[in-house]
Length: 270
Length: 74
Figure (cartoon, rainbow over the protein chains, first blue to last red):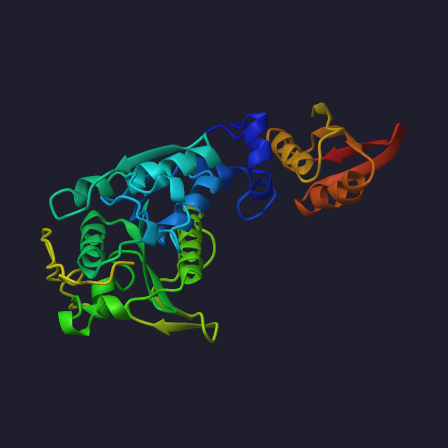
């Protein structure tokens, strides 16, 4: 890496990062040489993808098997009305490239499962969980633990959001905290599964911030801390957790290979 | 010890400061940077920002036409 590896356009584009002491020239070059995978081009993935593209994260992978639907647009702000019916990954890539043509966007127009996730995750430095179901969230955790990749868990429902950054084998993993997916009867049914659009924006932006901090090795991550945001009271609370030495995923006798979790039939689609 | 001359007149804040940081990053300690910058927010802000990064502003003088020459020691 040469220090002056910027052209005039890049200097101007990233000037407000370059002048920050905690980012500077080297930090911006680090971002340009980094790779982040975003799982889900939905409510959380939309702001995360846009901010990471704007920040100049050099390679961004985006995985989603879904197409844009009118009912997504209340919160999935990377997509527009014109994109209805288009694969979400393609729609997202178009906006990210329009925002920042310098970056490389890799699309995975498929749902991730136990047979394809590991090979994809291994290509990246950091993973953002923007999935809308517990089966995928637990699978992302398992794959990141096996691949030893740091990731940001995120979840939203109604006016509440939660996020935690997992550094596998160092900090508590998603399964240390929640163990297994909740039983089907405790998962909200479709009529209970509303979500405030802006809470997705708040949380996806926090997840992108964690990715940037991790890549730059700056600040303090939300590791061993679950951040819970309540949009109604605007309370931001952190709950501390510790790595569970007997965790069924990252503990001493943790998992050695991946398997899929059962997906609830009428699960919340956020 | 060597010296570098740059003309950053017409370049807005904070891009002028970002460019200055990049030039200084390529210089050695003790090297001198002779910089031309605009009047107004550039001369008000840039010298202080450069000093906050640990460099020394040795002098500043008006060069007419609303421009300033500042001498920086890395």
